[in-house]
Image (cartoon, rainbow, N blue to C red; front, side, top):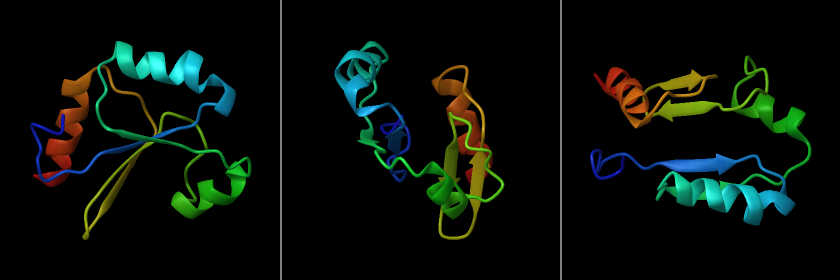
Length: 94
């Protein structure tokens, strides 16, 4: 994805439990050939930061934010594949 969009910086945030990193998160990243940066959200107070990100967000995951300095797009959905996600990026920037 990043090679197709060199001007886009992608950061993935995992909501996995810390004790699931080795058994769930890392295998998922490897199996899906995900090379983007991934950070682990370890804050147990989800109600606080959900409202800080977007008050209309229900807290459901997956949740995607696409943004630039002028606008933000919040997507409370999953993507069928990388092409589906790429289409969302293209719509946002075009």
